[in-house]
Amino acid sequence: MTQKKKRNKVHLEYGFIDTVNGEGISYQHTTMCVVILRNEALRPSRLQRYLQTKHAGNQNKPLAFFKARKTLETNIVNRHLRN
Image 1 (cartoon, rainbow, N blue to C red):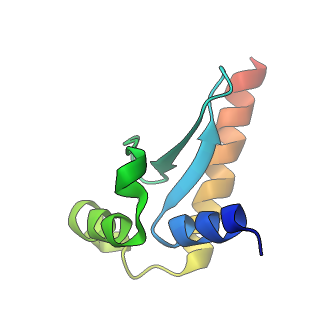
Image 2 (cartoon, rainbow, N blue to C red):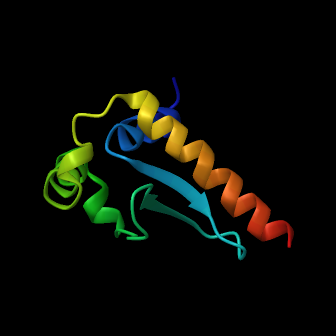
């Protein structure tokens, strides 16, 4: 598994996904709100703390929950970029 895929899987476990905006800039944000974190905040321990403090109701959700939210988010973004 490549480093990027491994990083993306770890981020997804805490509800964060990679997104590319209309200008081609990549950033990480949570699937539960619109907060975008800086790179130094993307360590697994900080992502876990963010999930526990801001989205406590979702901290014990399975990975499938976050994958479904990622799919939904991706579909919304793609639809928006096409229009």
